[in-house]
Image 1 (cartoon, rainbow, N blue to C red):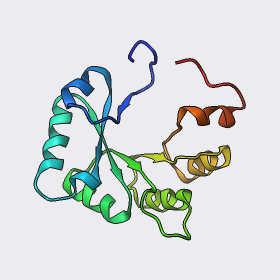
Image 2: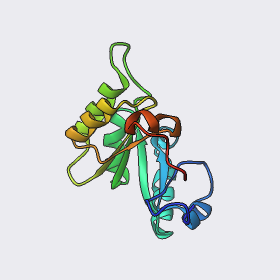
Image 3: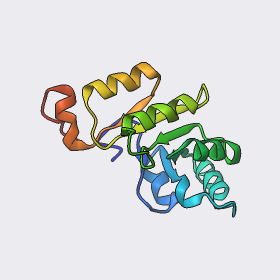
Length: 148
């Protein structure tokens, strides 16, 4: 992967931190799977940092965001709209979470279907990055997806 791109790589699959550190710059910890206060979140976060990885913590609501801040104070948040009310769009959820991310932290939006207008709105709101799934690149740039 390193030869394919000079962009930072966020490892999102469930593999060992050692394996991820050989190919990635950052590792994703999913707060939902580590919310119990048994020390696993803190242990994985510390181990990732020891291996030279940045840690992104995926959060789905403000409570998870606040708990993650209190427990490991991550520098990167992946904002996921997995938990939402019926009257909320995924973009609404991400924008609400974005407002709760402290200044100086990186915020990455994870929206399944992303339009150019949504990306622009996220950018105006201060989002640092958006995960765009491969099949969604063409409509955003009005060109075929790049070869990677």
